[in-house]
Image (tube, rainbow, N blue to C red; front, side):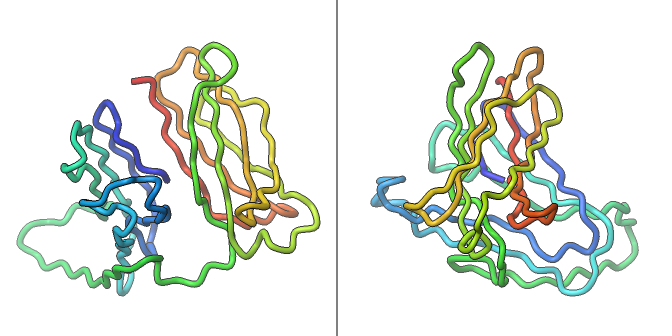
Length: 207
């Protein structure tokens, strides 16, 4: 899920059982995107947490805090067990943290490389452009299907295109936000009903 600097505090929960890993992934490493010689955001490492042993039911909680200046770290994520940790008893959680350019896992599917959001062509519409790349897109004879779901609102003009410059695919669509202030979106690529990409998640807010 692309992270944002929201105008209002945002909290999200990603439910899982015995999760395999979670963390923050730095995918854009092009210096022209950031143009910052001091902080060098293009060199920031990916941080990936891998639980050792089963952690059971729970969820990863993501906090996105509004900030005015880039010097403030405003993104937090942590695991929260579904069952309350009672005082006076022991609790053991083993994990491994990896810092590097990518997550420490082999993934044969496609992943999201870019997310762009802008004004749509009509009133109360938002345009989304999501780019995918990865091994699963290299030998496709036909374009995959874009599996798009929204919690509310309506989508239109859904298009899947080849992206030769990045050896990937681009998905474009418009979201009508009339009458709502928050919409959760989910997008993936499918071939013959099989998911061949990671799931792109996005929270749109009017504020």
